[in-house]
Each structure stands twice: as structure tokens, then as C-alpha cells.
Image (cartoon, rainbow, N blue to C red; front, side):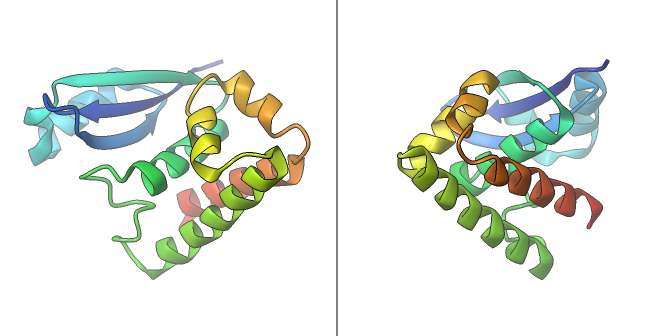
Length: 143
């Protein structure tokens, strides 16, 4: 079973440059190095190992929508109309999940980006929200 990484690249000032998901971290890093103008300014990379690719994609979507990395196009609303619609749906799901969990959307995002077990416990009362996050993440990947 392969592990999936959710990674964040930051510059030396701590500004978030990019959030991504990969099953092969070294290959993805090399691809960024070869093809991304911004990669030369990366000073730190944080890596979170996820329970599944679907889980990582859902976390990535939440991170991009709420943390607004400088160089992500997917999920940001900058790429195309379909992405904007998909991520508006995601925002509604996040807000519904926060209500179900009895917290604010920002608190939910912090919890989701923490320990995956916290995420599962937080949403145990709202499994339909978990399924919706996975559906939305899969919808973006297939688009």
C-alpha cells in the first residue's frame, strides 16, 4: 500500500507558496524544480502523510480554498469556471461540516489539516459530509 503525502512549500518569510498531493514525493519535487518558476524560493516544506489519496485530496482542497497559496491554480477559482463551481460546493460542505461539528469553519480547517484521526472523530456525526468531501475531490481530479 503506497502512502500519499499532502505537502506545503513555504518561502523564507513563511508565506505559503504551494499545496499539493503526491504518491511519489521525490518525483513531484523534481517536477516542481524543473517546471516551476517559484520553486527556487522554497525554504521549507511541510509533509503530512494521509490515510488515503482521497483523504489527501480533500485536505488539499480545503487548504487551497482557505490558506490561499500563491501558486496553486487548481481549486483556487483561478483556473476555470468548473473549478469555481466545484470549490463553491466544497465551501458549502465545509460550512455544513463545521455546523455539524459545533465549531467555526476555520476551526474545522485547522482540525482537518492536523491529525487525520482528529478529522475522522470531528466528522463522526456527519458522514455525509465526509462522503461529500471525497466526491468533490474526485470530481476535480476527473475534470
